[in-house]
Picture 1 (cartoon, one colour):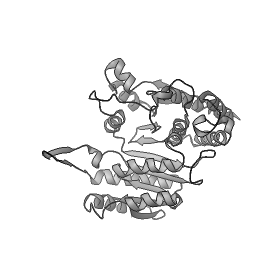
Picture 2 (cartoon, rainbow, N blue to C red):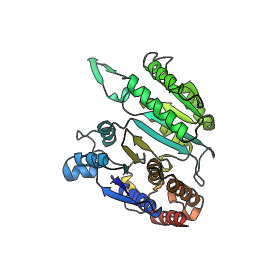
Picture 3 (cartoon, rainbow, N blue to C red):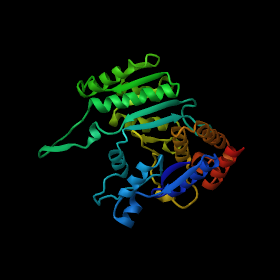
Picture 4 (cartoon, rainbow, N blue to C red):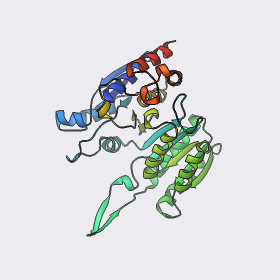
Length: 333
């Protein structure tokens, strides 16, 4: 029996996380769901977007599954997602990007993985006003952070039978900062001689992703580059609504969709839960339940292939409930 912290979130979050919960339960894997909340609605109730009890629940659970959350604007609240990453040291952002049947996209056979360092770089948030009209923003790069994210990428590649890791950089301009990133990646790469390793600039990778993403396997990036490229890659297969995500640390992991909370369609029964469902499959895989994870992914692919069980945002006819019913039926078949 696994203990999973479930964070429904805001907007369509409760709908899509409930859908994912139903799909996971259909696999037969024993789950004790511990529901807690964070985000804009939680701030209205308790005055906090991320209560300490939520962090404690995640730390004590085997994993967490999270829906999209909102952050009140103009009220002094920091992003919930940023606070989660910092409080739990979720240093690795994992974004598998794969083409799905029935989902309109430019390419049909994309299958790559984005590994992004989550804790430093320009997103360290260290900014200063030098003099009026001049602001500096510091890019913080440490050997420790670069080494552990490279080690994560190569370990993931080995465990999932991936053949190549591409370190993405701009050392041609930032010779010291991105140079350190590359040096750490090179040292880790030497421990994995069976995995091909290459280095390419961020502009080269961005261009070639939209020309032919099949040239890439595992992309290893620092924080800012990874933030941009992970969304770019999602656009190649249909958008954020069909791509799973995870933020992982040592002994703790939060699996989540990366799309917004879409409050404009909340409660209409039309939300597409695919991203959260696939994130739940990623969670099952992380728990060691690879067979159950594959059953979920196969069910998603079969349901999306049929118009009558595909949600309306993807050109289908199904409501959220109808889509989930189809997924559960496929899993139990």
